[in-house]
Length: 282
Image (cartoon, rainbow, N blue to C red; front, side, top):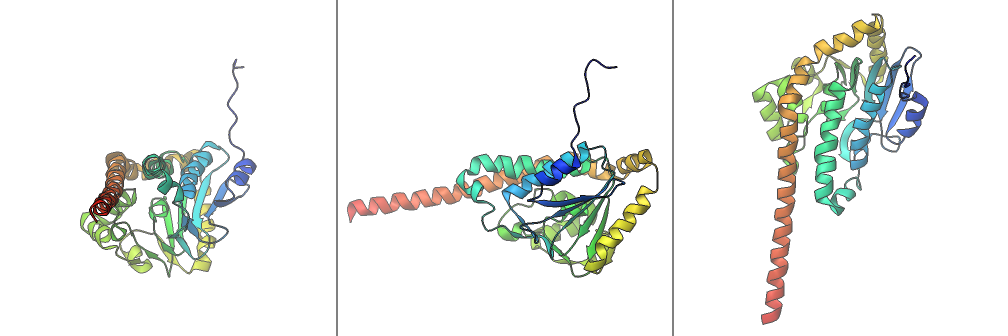
């Protein structure tokens, strides 16, 4: 008997409660776990808080040896296609702090944890129109609702698309198609996503989870070690891609974000200074 014990692993009931404001979690007796991202029970809306919760969830699921497969999807009719109206108030209060914490550290953890910290097969389910769809597209298998449209709004919002979406689209679409999607905010419908190899199956929304459970049953039919080591084979392209491109992309995006906001700040300061000078001479 060892002189020191194992550190206790996470218990499902504990983190099911801990993450309830961000994810509805349920798990079958065989270890197949369903995680549905939500905001107040409806479609998930991006915020600083739920952005951080995503990576925390992946690491927690990965640390629980009773989990054997993860199905990841969203509640409601879309996946992160809208922003929480107050979801970035923290960033505005302290931009330098949260540009690192939110826009660099948490984002890198989210993508990296999906690929590296989960030793179990993953099935992403795109339940509707999806921005930040990379989290679902980078799962081992991906199902998509017939009515769903996948798009990246970064560039059209004045932001650099460097926070993981570029890795995903370049890997799945190739250089030219990815460049077009990133620069134009191209709306990629479900049929096109299937034709281009972004998703594996397209189904009516009400059939998505049923199909995901059936795929889970098939995957679970093989021994545990086979399932887990197969994920290591099929994730090699993603591991190479994020090793080569993820950190640099986040760094570029963060620099642009800070530089753009600094320019806005400097312009406002210059205008305030000019106004003050005019008041002196008026």
